[in-house]
Image 1 (cartoon, rainbow, N blue to C red):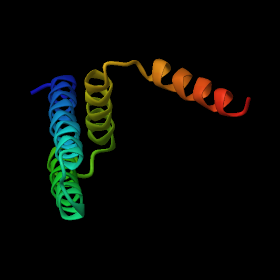
Image 2: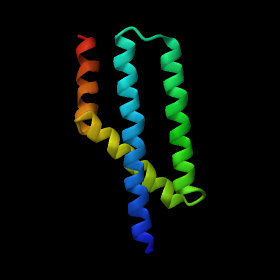
Image 3: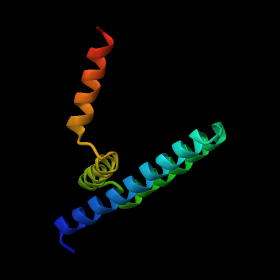
Length: 102
């Protein structure tokens, strides 16, 4: 398989890991709001983190360019799921910061 195709596969797998991680986070927050406890949050974090680390390790091993491709995919999933661009998030934080100082 060509190297560029391997990078594309790792990038797409990174998107999948991001969807799992952030989708699981969204479910945890919903359950927490509905009355879940600290064990739910801790358990969810440990499972999501373990899956994420294992996924990154399996996909990337010691190849730096694969780590970067996977991380870019993971970050892409975060942007997709947040329904906001990184710039929109950044500007919203800047406006919130300025509003609290007035």
